[in-house]
Length: 211
Image (cartoon, rainbow, N blue to C red; front, side):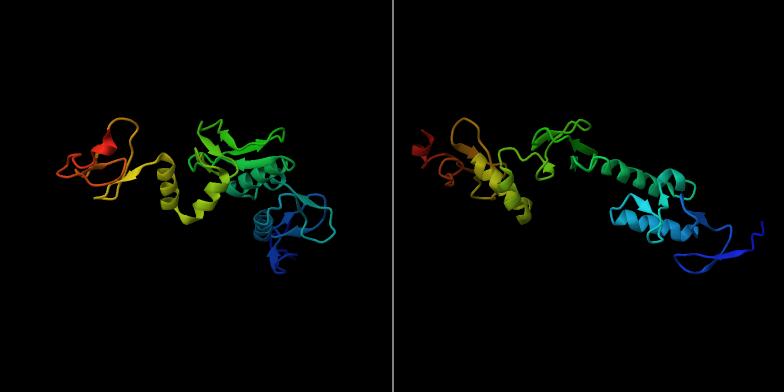
């Protein structure tokens, strides 16, 4: 074969050397390798994993195994992953929200899932909100507060836990049992029941609250 012979690529319409071509499975059309790769990538970017010949109305097809010799490993793996996901088109698909896991999970549709424990990283998350499990908070409440940022979520948690703010440094303080006399880590004391500052770091003046 004369390697200097050229052909016209049907995608970029440029003349290419005959050794720089890729033929489509099931048809007679050929395209340069660079254009073939760009075509496959553009289809995957559009969430299309069943890829046909670029020629309209042609029955030629492309698949990962047939194209493996020209595909970079990352593109080959991406295409294979997309095909696997499309096989579960009728099922609910979701990912573990923890960044160090992110595994694909499939709900077979037999039951509604909200709280779910990832079988791989063993951590619990909310399927509806796609975050770590928001204990004590409904999905509707979380989705309302989440756009407002972490401070709004923390303030809601503090309210539900009935935490008090130190009147001196404004840090939150929690109490599960014992006297209402609280000494914050800032060194100042206050009444957990009414929130008033103590006098000279004692509970004097707030006796009624501490009985």
